[in-house]
Image (tube, rainbow, N blue to C red; front, side, top):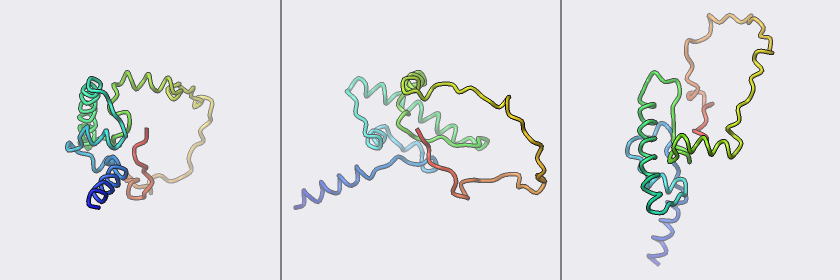
Length: 136
């Protein structure tokens, strides 16, 4: 009975695991936790390569998020253990890396009649619950 309870508790913990959001992310987030969060598994050689790339990218993310001059924050997703080149290749294979042609030069922009002096200097969209978590 005790083994069943321990197994069930472990199963619930592993299946309910989720990556930290960008506000919770810090240097205590580990590669092993990442593997669990994103259901990844590598052979020994691949594991060491992916771990190296993960920690390199995590350092970039943490440095970016610590910079208060940045207007946006980075987070963890399933691509954090990929190099930039691998990610570009992945996007091109999946069709999401195609460049779209901009039509802005064909559009006509009308002059605004809104008095912008009444608008706030800054808006934190998180306070208005309109910012979504990091997406792939």
